[in-house]
Amino acid sequence: MRQFLLIPHLKLHNANAMSSPYTIGFPAMTAWLGAVHALQRKLQSKGCEVSLTKVGVSCHEFNLQTYKGQGDFVHSIIGTANPLDKGGSRPAFIEEARCHLEVSLLIECQNIDPDEKEQFLEDVQQLICSMKFASGDVLAVKKCQILQFDEDADQDRELKPILNKLMLGHVLVERRDLVIESMKQGKDALDAVLDCLKVTHSSSVDENGKVIWTSKRNAQGWLVPIAVGFQGISELGIAKNQRDADTPHRFAEAVLTLGEFIMPYRIESIDQLLWQYHVDLENNLYLCQNSTTI
Image (tube, rainbow, N blue to C red):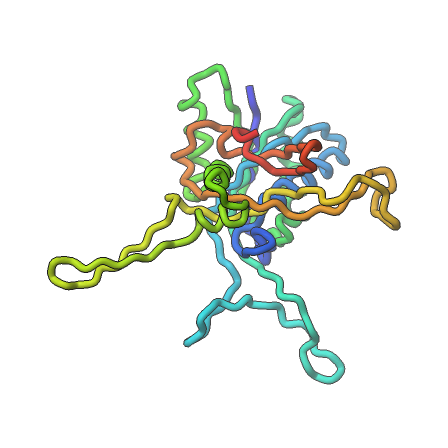
């Protein structure tokens, strides 16, 4: 019997909208798994020895803080109004993409004491309101629940009630397979991602001489580029003034892949929507991956 913690309709204000080093949009999966890990540490500090191992994210509402004025060709990021300096002018600032959004989190839990479920839910509810998710402030959250999933029972019957609680929304799943397929044709990783995202416009003339334009993409679906972890670019070692003296240090760069937003009713397996940490030391990879792709 698997157990899941549902954090329903979590409303966040001014969350970090850096989907990847190159794009802005929905927060990266590293942000969501990082928040779940922080929640686990806070629970364990209260004496609750629960493990939060996997997370699924369903987005109900998303509002990217950008602006496009009349005659503008591109959108601009809406920045914060920093205090004026002593000369009365605005100080220099670094543009930070932000968004307001509402999500539901489905978190797989282990080691929940059956006699302390009510206390566990009460602790989670209190801790969520004091935390940040993807650097966003929590405005509101509905009552958390514990859901059961029996793997030995009929899968469709067990899965449907869970997916219903993630509606109306879109669940983010990994589409690394599209990137791999494109790379097999000789493209490098970035070109493979762009090849799946580009829109090709073409025109044709019908029998009446009218020009008809059509647009299409190589891959169907709501595809987005998203950061899913890091790859080490230096050897493990000790750095001067590092935060944790006992943990080896290394420099790393972000890993980019494709994700797809799909409606929950299209999910065929509970693991299809769950993300978890995966470490590949042979290739120096520290990743967030869909459970079905590991």
